[in-house]
Amino acid sequence: MCGIAGLIHKGKNAKIGEQMISMLLALKHRGPDSTGLALYGASNGSGGSSESYVMRIKLAEQEDTLHGFRIAQEIAERKDKVDQRLKELGASEVKAEKVREYAYRYTFNFSNDLRRLANFIEDVEGAEILSLGNSLELIKDLGDASDIAEQYSLSDFKGTHAIGHTRMATESDVDIRSAHPYWAYPFADISVVHNGQLTNYWNSRREMERRGHRFMSNCDSELIAVYIADHIAAGENLQEAMEKSIDAFDGVFTYLVATRDSLGMAKDTMAAKPMVLYESDDFIALASEEVAIRSIFPNEIDTIDPYEGEVRVWQH
Amino acid sequence: MATLNTTPDETGMHQERLGDRAQHVFFKAEEEENFTYPDSYEVDYNKRTTIDVADMDARAVNGRIRECMQQGYGTIVLQNPSAKHSLAVGILNRLNLYIEGSLGYFGCGLIDGPNIRISGRVGWSCAENMMSGTIVIEKNAGSTFGAALRGGDLVCKGDVGSRTGIDMKGGTIIVGGRTGILSGFMMQRGRMIVCGDAGDNLGDSMYDGTIFVGGKIASLGVDAAEGELTELEERFLQEKLKMYDIQPPKSWRKVVSGKQLWNYDNLEPSEKKLIL
Image (cartoon, rainbow over all chains, first blue to last red; front, side):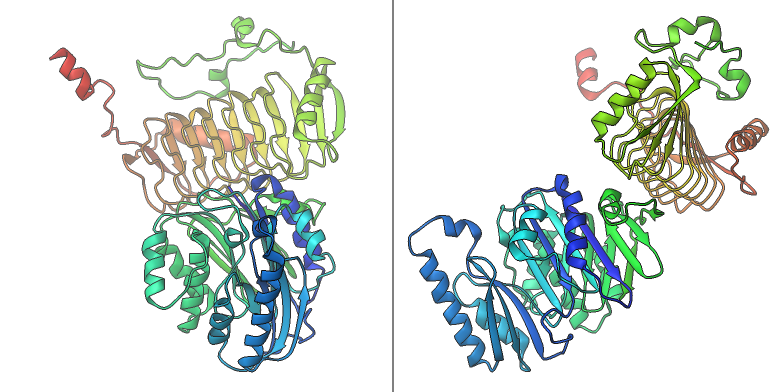
């Protein structure tokens, strides 16, 4: 059991950091192991410019910092390597902000091959890019939503849409690597959260690996991100890619995908995992439980449960 | 307790013909003492109270309802339920309960007797294992609506999710709108009335009971078959929907068990070995 949530404001910015934290706190009972958010806005000051990037990166697992005498020095060395490699590939105006002992937020300008950049940086030992994009900021860590909000100062984050996840680890470890959301490497601004289990995970993963995609975890949710990214790269739109995924994946699942300008949801053909939807003219919210939506709308609202095999996509 | 003058047969609650195997016992007013729990409370429907549950958790709310019944309140209004889970569960008493708002998951489960009206919607697994009474929901409902229902009327005036009436063993489920996949899965007795469309695999592996659908049926499940609607059933449907102010569809389709998978009297292979 995990909890997922998503929201999108149509044509306006709002305090989506605060709203998503509130929703995830209401879903805390569905998964206490880790919490993550993918927030879409223009907080890097780029206004979503196609050459101005935000990169969220971790240089060690949280538990690594509890062991060994040299970990602080190793993280510093890894960061130096990342800085050096960014410059080497032509990134300019590089700024790095230390968010946690092991997590950094970078902003930079870049106009070359994004996959090459991502590969080169992840070649640094212990480095994993959590997100890379023009408007996406992906934060995930161990603990509940209140811990994450405090550690990463998310309450003031303004933007248009967001997805979030509270994780109960069932088939992979309790670590940041296995936490959601997943960035759809190496495609800018695509992220996924998922509640369920894909039973054809290994077969599908092998197929994606043969097509050149890399996996950072053994978590089946990462496969959805990679699959969607692969299909979008092939020229499909989000709706088409998600509709195909319903047939491609076996198992029980409900998942949310966010891109630079849209939010999508998909539900498996057995409708075995919950999802509640609230839709008004200028705002859409989805969550595993209505109580999460009610955490930002205290008054009575009309909600529905999407049906089996249903895919919906909204633009902001 | 108030005196009950009519039997369920007279009110049209039970119209189905029971087979020889049935152990169903219908309520009889003259045997009232056999149909109430020993620790149930004497309540007066004219004694009314309101509980604002905005700052209460589920355990506190359910405890407060019990306290109110103990004090003789027969009509209780819950305000601000805010889609919380597991509210109004385990009520084994006569009671008029009005819920102003929406419930989360597992609302009104394990109840026997109360009449509940909900102005909002309900989440997954509403009225699970309900034994008797009525529940009327004005808006939509989530999946596994009325799972393992044993008796009473469970009514949702809007749309309902998947697996509606899964494993139901009696009673009546009424859906004003559509219902999702695998509705009536492993149904064993009772009636399901769906005024709108029904999803795939309707009545899959149903043992018994009847499903009436007013709209389109996406597909029938394994061992579910279409039956012929009788005049008595048409009258029953008309009366039943009238009771809850639901507009009936123009026509009905009836789904029953094909009974091709019935193997009750067959011996298991291991049993055969022992005997033969």
